[in-house]
Image 1 (cartoon, rainbow, N blue to C red):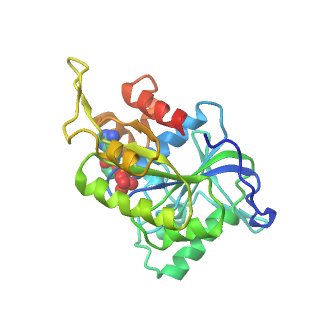
Image 2 (tube, rainbow, N blue to C red):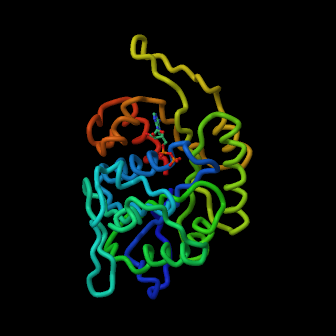
Length: 260
Ligand code: ADP
């Protein structure tokens, strides 16, 4: 349970944020952004105040998943003002008009500087959770997050296949080396629920994430089904947690959020 709070240097400007949770994966395409967004919404639906920082500066996808385009963020008194969507406070590099349709071509130090600004130069105000959607892998951005501010911990997203879980292990290793706690692992695209018989089919194999959680003695937070509603909701900016909160997929996100 992470709600015990963190002690943050007042001068980071983030003392009003109770929990900062980084969402990491080994590989891209495992649904890390989808899980970050829907978990943020699931936490918010419990009454928590939640922010979502899209730290995937090279490939921001949160604006699309929330149906937001560019030009959403403003600066007031030298602080970035987060955009608001579905009650979430959201910051993304994709909101900057000139960047929305261009590749971010920056070297590591610049990218680290952008992330630091998004963290500490943003008016997050009072939040119970700030979810940070990290880019996949073990590059500058996860490293900067781990070294800039004390975070509550990392949540690891993987799919069941060995190609994803074997690389997720490397990301876990990096955070362990940096003494950042791992909150647990979520298995995305875990199974397919048959629309006719409601049975779960583990079409990509069973237990990839559970194996990791046992190997590293970390909690297994939940399994999210492979579901076309999750995908289509993301593509049109209408997350399933909002459009279909009673669906088995939304329930799966709620269970994972409860286990955080
Ligand atoms: P990542 O952030 O790991 O690169 P994304 O969240 O962008 O991955 O997801 C990649 C693609 O997979 C997107 O099209 C997304 O809608 C889809 N997707 C993610 N999770 C699921 C799921 N559980 N069921 C169906 N499609 C999913």
